[in-house]
Image 1 (tube, rainbow, N blue to C red):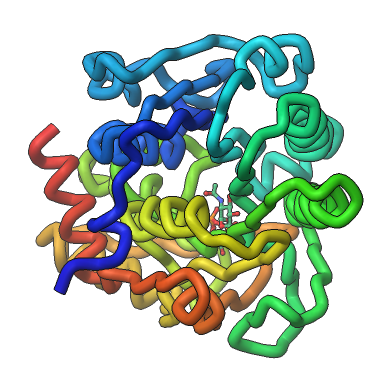
Image 2 (spheres, rainbow, N blue to C red; image 1 turned 180 degrees about the vertical axis):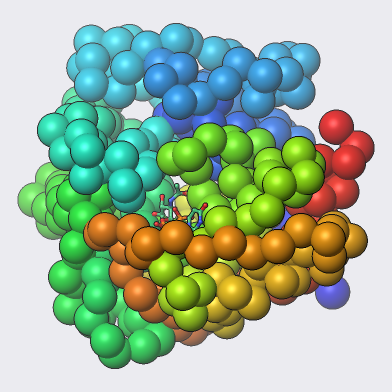
Length: 322
Ligand code: UD1
C-alpha cells in the first residue's frame, strides 16, 4: 500500500529548507524536488557539506544561497512568496553543546527567532521545525508522549525546547502556522562520520575502517532510532496539515539498547570479527528514549516504513554503492 506522502504533489509549491547541506536537509531537498517543488536551500556550511547537494544542484528547480540563519536581512531577501519553511539548520550535538553552550544557544535559539521574525514579516504560510526528543530529558516515564513534562538535561535540549516555545508563542500571538516535529534518533545516508555525529554514522565509519565499536556506558541505555527516509515523510505530512501550533513525536516507536543495535549492525555488515569496546558514560546523556508516535499516526497519517534492520540495511547499501 502506498503511504500518504508518496501520493503528495508539491508542483507549484515554493519551499525554503534551512540547513539544506546537512544530513536531513539535503535528503529533504532531494525528495521535495522529486515531488515537483521549487526548493530554495540555505546553509552556512558550518556543519553542512556541498557534496550532500550534488543531486539537488542538477535539478532546475533548486536554488542555493550561502548564508546564516542569524542574519535577518539575508532571510528577508530570500523569504519571498514562500509556501513552506522547513527549518532544519541546527547545532545538533549533545556533547558539543556542553562544551559550547553559547554557540548552541545562538544557533538554535537566536536562529529560530530570526526565522520566525522573517516569516512574520513576509507572511509565510507555514513553518515546520525540527525539534528533538532531547527536550524530554531523563524523566523516567516511558514512552515519551507529547503532553509529558519536559526536563532537558543538556544545553542542546534546552535550546530545542526554547525553539519550540517560540514556535508556540508566534503561533498564538501572531497567528503563524507552525508545526513542530520532535525527532528521536535519526540515522541514514549523509549523516557525518565525525566524533560529534550520531552513533550509527560513527559506528558505520568504524566498520568500514575495520575498527572495533565503542559504547559510552554499559550499553543498556536505549534510543528510538528512526531512518531518515521516515523523517522526510513526516516533514512532508507536517507541511500539509491544516491545524497549526501542534507538536508531534517522530520516532519508530520501538526502543533498542545500544548493545542490541551494535550487535545488529555487526551482523548486517558481516563484521563479526569486530568487537564492542566500552568507555565511561557520557555526561549529559539521557538513559532511555522511547517514542509514543500515536499522535503523529492519528493526525499526520505518519506510518514509519523502516524497522531497525531495514533501515540499517538500506543505509549500509548506500555506503557500499557510494
Ligand atoms: C541524538 C542527536 C540529536 C537529536 C537526539 C534526539 C546527533 C549527533 N545527536 O542525540 O541531534 O536531537 O538524538 O533524541 O545526531 N554513543 C556511543 N558511542 C559513540 C557515540 C555515541 O556509545 O561512539 C552513545 C551515546 O553516549 C548515547 C547514544 O550513543 O548514549 C546516542 O548518542 P548520539 O548518537 O550522540 O545521540 P543523542 O545524544 O541521543
